[in-house]
Image (cartoon, rainbow, N blue to C red; front, side):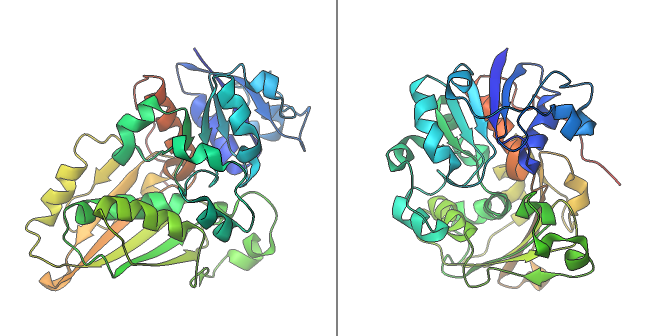
Length: 344
């Protein structure tokens, strides 16, 4: 069995890790930490987990205890993994970080977007960006994984075939994205209150969002050169889900775009290229570690439109983290992640 610890187990991504790992045949939870809920039973705080973790209790972070685990997930705000990751890595524990702490390769750029100095720049060189569809082999050997953000996952997967094939103008790419309120985390915030978010939709971060440099970094890798990206996120009145509408201007006759996308993701267990003419819905991926994609070329013009949907807490966070764990420890890639989406 793979012995696992979770740092920051009371937030949405932490409890999603617990929900998914309850179905994993090769994982045993050794420790789950929370300073605010120390001493509280997991099934007491999250009744949906009764019968799965009845003896598991939240405790303060203890490097000695966590260091005895094979792998530790960090489901924490940015900056937390900086302080503990190096010590755990020195003890031989693999680290899978769901925060943004190791996603950007440039420490100064990270400091600019997150408003504080990077706390562990020496670790950036060994961090592997955990998007399995691009870095599968590097993930298998990694000691430190930076799990991609939710918006970056949907945008990159939707644009990869076009950029890798050199079919669109890399100076003018547009990502128009919508997210449910769980993307803001579990902490109480006025904009996330039901009376504030319900029956309304708004854009935010239009002049600069923290996920922008991460998306640009990944798209530039795919294009083998700089990508000019306009990224505008929106808050929508739903609990889970991300819908990304992506626009690119074709620079050459692309041939069969449907075949291009189907070929790129053939054999990928968690990317579903839908039939021609489809419009994927966020509810079709709710609770599932899946990205559903559809590609359109309106009126045979020079514009290609890609639609990509994910569950921000699963494929956009905890499910993708477990996919990384499976690759790192030689498990079946779908272990703990094979359940279909929830509908309605």
